[in-house]
Length: 284
Image 1 (cartoon, rainbow, N blue to C red):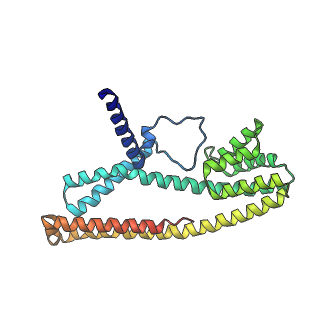
Image 2: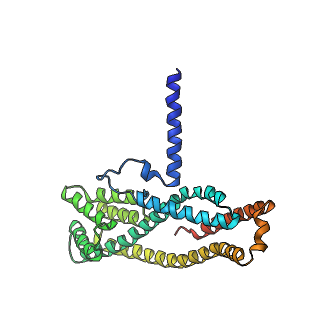
Image 3: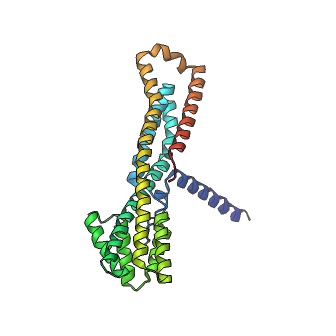
């Protein structure tokens, strides 16, 4: 009886540790090596060892510097810098967002190429082969996501898989609205026997205009994010300046009740940073 209960607790403990590691962004290290035959999913991102180490080192260094400015204590700053182990979570989110944005832009180029090939009189399947040729001219890097996806699509067509199924699989893995809308329009047009060229032209125009507007909005948001990061850095720069220029004036804050005051101020700053980050993260 006792021997059967112990493994259950061990299993729960391991699962809790794994969930915590996944939340912190360490899942790429704890999980087994990815299966090379597994098609990529654009809703997840696993940091490799180099990206993980870089995130932890930079995050811990920044947290140590910020804590030292507030407490002027190396041991306490080292303890607080342990929180840098969670920085891969934000690094992973940033890299995933960048990858999905690049996929949208690459899909926009592929869509325009597809419309041009259809207008030239090619069949739909041969039009995608033309897209592959155009994508190779636009992107010299063979690791480009959309270039690899077009190659996968052509490989499936060569193996007599239906085009609609291959495109639907791409839409399911990408979870990008523009790709899903394109697949829905193409599937509906083929089933209903509509004018494929006209439907694809209108669809590509609408999706292209939408992506262009999204790009303009993201440029404006990037400027505001840069300004918000400057505002986040100002309190620490001001605190460092006071510590160097008027150390005697700041000395009471680094003992006794001063630690409590500095802790409250640090927590308030963190709350302000969190609110600012939430405001800047607008879903388009």
